[in-house]
Image 1 (cartoon, rainbow, N blue to C red):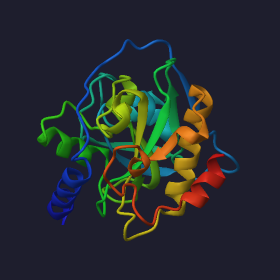
Image 2: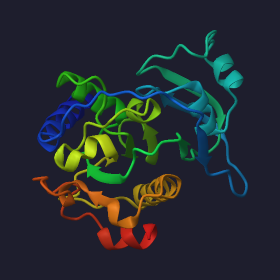
Image 3: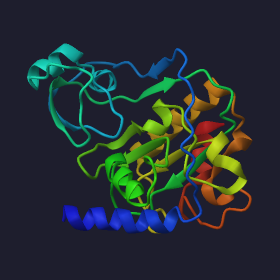
Length: 250
């Protein structure tokens, strides 16, 4: 089943990103700040298994589960906090429920936010990274992926990719020069046929509002891929709930 899911993800991504262009341009990384939701109310903790995504660090994993880096290293017998491998499975001892962790980098390049769907039934940032690498790209094309509960990730989980942590141009929307000025967010799922889950919508609204506030992006510049002038796609899907989305982000 895993092989089938991966093949579906690769095929779907090939179709959806046919018009997207590579743009592996890196910038220097100034001092960053982090936005995340602190736990509210009693926190129920239990051990969890986390699969390391592309470019993920122990610091981010620690913040996501509210567990110290030292505790994670001890539970997994790690001796170097900087050496993680994509696909590596980590035991997170006494993990709290996940919360979004959004790192904000000082920048004046981000003028738009572009919303996508993966057009696949499932997948994770790691799956899409592999599919995009197979296309000859340097890394995954999106800046963020919002999971739907498949592939070992939780429904609504926000994954920041190397395109974001290294402040690279995207490879998600060639139309309108959006790769160089638009933040690409991909929700896992095919919203021509299914609905965005409530948890995905909650995470999308939180992520978009955080990015809008910190980069002073107006609501008029938050677009679906298919709404970009020159883009020939129905992404993020005919059933994407625009009315609900705008109500939560305006």
